[in-house]
Length: 112
Image (cartoon, rainbow, N blue to C red; front, side, top):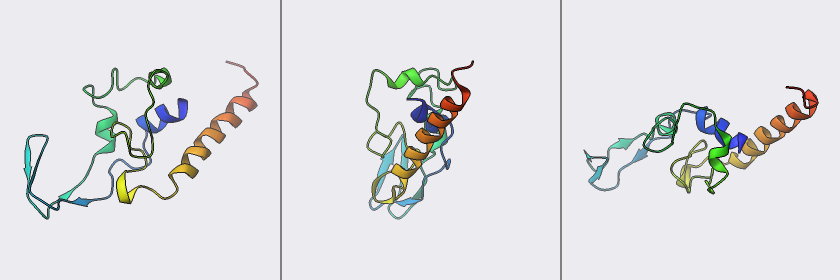
């Protein structure tokens, strides 16, 4: 949960790679013409109060009651992108964050 919350608040990159609209679409009330480049602002989604309760607070327990995928299937949490352009080393990044947290907790010896 701590890794998910850390990556929610501090994604590796604030914007996903550009995507091109392959048809005229209406997105969040905006008309997006075919051929337009669309950038997803991961940083803004992570801080949106319509998406997350108390979005600016570090609260890992928010992931205790629900299964939120970090691999791009749940569009509330996109630290590594989504779809065909998802980061190929996303699992490595997740494993590294969890490993570093484990080492940090182990080396602290339980001290507060």
